[in-house]
Length: 251
Image (cartoon, rainbow, N blue to C red; front, side, top):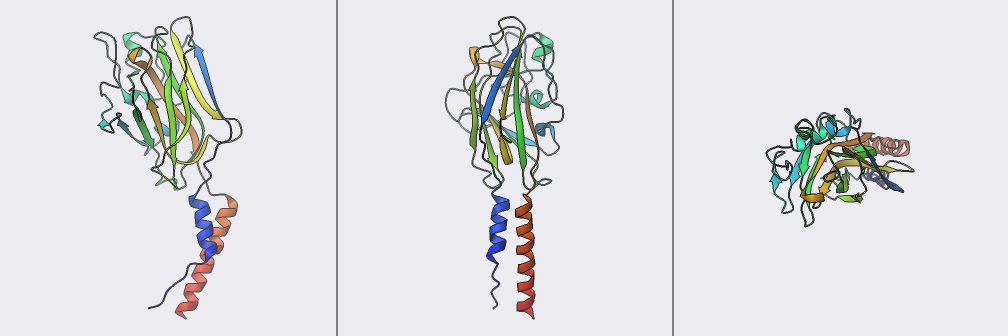
C-alpha cells in the first residue's frame, strides 16, 4: 500500500484560508434617537437568498417567529414577530396599530444565554463567509417607554461555526424626550470590518424596558469574504506540488 504525503506548504496555506482573520480593533456603538422613521436597508445580508435563522429561549428551546416572547403588545393590539425584522421596512413612526404591525414586541429574558435570534449566512455560495462592516438595530414606539434597545451581539466564523464571540453589549436608555420615539443603534469598527469570515450572527435579548420593546429592523451590512492574495498563491503552489508528487509516485 502506497502512502501519499501532503506537502507542508499545502497544509499551511489551507490553514491560512480556513482561519480567516476575524479580529476587530476598535468597535464603536453609536445610538441615534429621533422623532421620525429611519430609512433601513432592503439589501442587507439578513435579506440575502439562503440566509436562515433560528430563535431560542433561555432554556435552548426553539421558538416560532410568532412566539409570545416576540409578539408582546398592549391590550388587544398585536405585534408581528421576528419576520418583520428583516423585511426592509421601518414602518411609520409611533405606536399606532399600523406601526405595531411593523414591530416585533420582544420581551427578552432574565437569565443567560437569554432569548436569541441567530442568522446563518449562505456559505454554499461564499465558502469563506462574509466580512461585516456595520450592524444596525432599530426600535420605535409612540413614546419613550418601549424604545430603548438592549441586546448582546455575537458572531461565529467559518473556521469555528459553533463558537460565538461577543462584539458588543448595549443597553441604551437615553431615548428622545419627545414622541414618537425612534432609535438606531449601530455597531461599527473605526479601523476595519467589525468581523471577518463570518458564518452566523446572533442577537441576544435580556429583559427589556418595561417588559418588552418594539424592535423594527435588524440590518447586517457586509460583503463576501475572499482569500488574501498571499494565501491564494500559497494554496496554488501547494496544490501544484501535491499533484506533481502524486504523478511521480504513480510513475
